Amino acid sequence: AVATHRAERGAHYDPAFDADLKYRQSIDLALRSAVARSEFSLVFQPQVDMETRLTIGVEALLRWTSPEHGAVSPAVFVPLAEENGTIVEIGAWVAHEACRLAVANNWPGRLSVNVSPLQFTQDDVVAMIASALLQSGFPPNRLDIEVTESLLAQGGAIVETLEKLRDLGASIAIDDFGTGYSSLNYLSSLPLDKLKIDQSFVRQLANPRNASIVETIVSLGRRLGLVVVVEGVETEAQFDLLAALGCHIAQGYLFGRPGALPAVEQPLNQQLAPPLETPVLLDGTR
Ligand code: C2E
Ligand code: MG
Ligand code: MG
Ligand code: MG
Image (cartoon, rainbow, N blue to C red; front, side, top):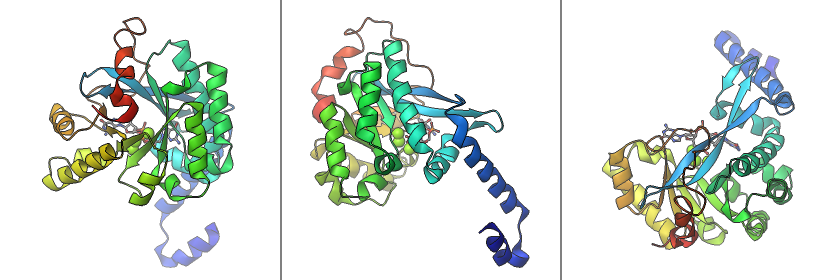
């Protein structure tokens, strides 16, 4: 296929294309042994209740340091891991490790984990999540599973699988909302708990037309009884506007870059715990 492609390119042969292809092939190969070689780690980014500005949760984000390639961004390797299927093994590692670390550090808040669409088709994702919860002892009702719009578009058995994850006690968040091939149909028909507005909307919030789009997504989410999370919040000005538009939870550099689990200075059930029990987190109402 490579040779054919090259032949078709004919006079337009581009050495940069070959270099890129070689890089991707070598990443592809390295991904296949990266879990076994313990090359992955997790960082955590705070999620803040916009009313109290207290951290109420964290999202686990994957990091890969390859001996050969150095630090590779998940924006680069996750799509490749989805292409070659290694995301199934990697994603299971993420869920187990995130729950394990949360328990080991007495993390009292919510924990969000990204689950790729391929894990739903190539793995028993319910059994995998159940195992991560059971092995770690992390409370199921503090786990959020982030799925993307492309998964929801698959239809079929997905509703049943999401319901089973909810039966375990976990919540479902739709990630990067507004960037995929959105069908508003599934928003009302699927068992969802949270809607995460993609950071691309936040970046362009100064543009009134984009602010209108965000306002519409927020009210849609709220009317459907979803908790509305917004990612990529970098400035106080963005925060104020998003709070005024009715978002419930904010995530972004304004409150912290992905890193170690935030240190909890107050004992459990004091500073961090109460917001977890407020209705905003359970049904999206205030
Ligand atoms: P995502 O799930 O939408 O995660 C949010 C991304 O936005 C993270 O990038 C985070 O570092 C970045 N971010 C957070 N706040 C800000 C901000 O204020 N400004 C800017 N400019 N960026 C911000 P990261 O960690 O590079 O991850 C990129 C994507 O890789 C994730 O997007 C997710 O799609 C994927 N990914 C990461 N970890 C996993 C994983 O464990 N499993 C799967 N399937 N995908 C993952
Ligand atoms: Mg996410
Ligand atoms: Mg996201
Ligand atoms: Mg995103």
